[in-house]
Image (cartoon, rainbow, N blue to C red; front, side):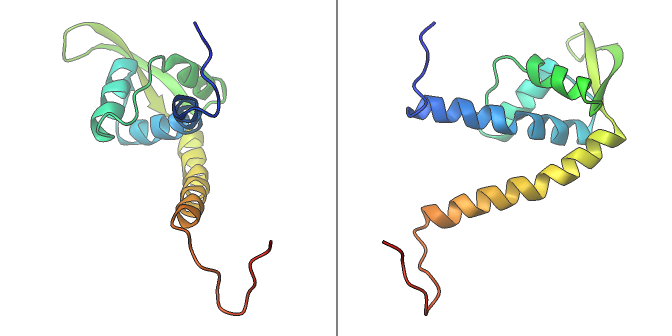
Length: 127
């Protein structure tokens, strides 16, 4: 498979997905226990397909490794198939709470730059 150039829009999208996947997974699991396929559907539906992850297991395994989530019961999903459900831990909730202001601050800062803001009166633009 050919590598996507990091300067290409697809490369940027891939990097952004990697950066926010764990945050999104924790946010969804904070609402209810879910299995991998359900997490993927929720991400796609709620983001109007802007966030589509092909392989969520890397993020799930990292979150499991750090104790942010645990494997819950294997239950029958609405489609009748047995699925491994995941459950957020108290440590995961604390991590999510810590990540949210970082995410919002970063995105807010990027938005300010993209808006092309003006510097406050009395400050000079550096050359």
